Amino acid sequence: MRIIEAAAEAGASGYTFSTHPINLQILAELKRSDMLKAGFELNPVLPYAQGYVRLANEKGMSGLVNETLSKLPVLDRARTVIETGFSALKLDPIGLMKSYLDLELQPYLNVKPEKSGIRSVLLHEVVTDLCLGLRNVRMLDAFAQHIRERYHAKPGFVTYNLVRFAEVFRQAGLALEGITIMTPFNSIGYQMSQSRQSCEDCLSTLDESDVIAMSILAGGYSNLDEAVNYISGLPKLSGIAVGVSSQEHARETFAKLTGVVQE
Image (cartoon, rainbow, N blue to C red; front, side, top):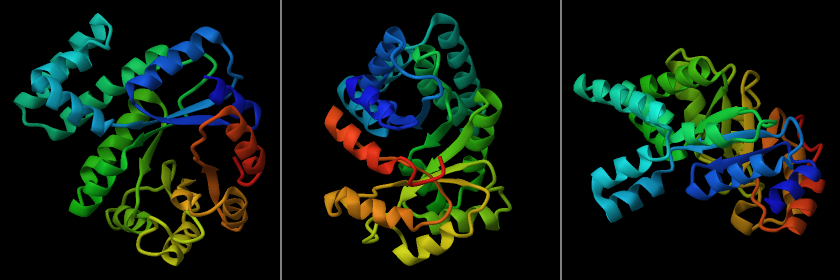
């Protein structure tokens, strides 16, 4: 909580987080403390794939379902069970996807600080890039529509292949307008597929999307000053997602990053 507060005071405009149980506790405490300024936005990334695997290994599939459902209020739990059951009976993967998204996201909406809105809900790169590889654009489009219609938030996608993402969307005739794309950008091309140059070229064509840079430190290879120098030269970035580990680290990091991009 103190790290998030320090980051906000130093200029961070939001919190990007996985749906790990500890983040549920953090948001609940932030709501009780009322320490965040108005306009501090939340960007959840889901599903929390590692958590599902761990729970399934520890408690089996029935234990996984029971523990996940236990996080919801009674009425939300009943609705989710009914909707998921109908989708399973109809063998409807889109319906199942929507139900599980709701199941995972709802507890965080229930405890989020009142001053903080949901700016974007982002699909985890494991799912995004799997769909890209299979060219399953129907699932990606259904996710985007569901986030817009049910939560009135901007749909987002985390991907390690920005070029492929834009190519698949355009070939399928899907709009890139009004979506968030979180993807690596750093000076050595770390995690930038197919190459740094191809990702930079692709970024220059994305007038209609919000592109958030991540992995700007290249896994620790670059220092913050090098990262800022590189990011400052990129056009059309709308945000930067970066991890911090202490209050002092947060203050130093966001003091240097504030003003580097438009938002």
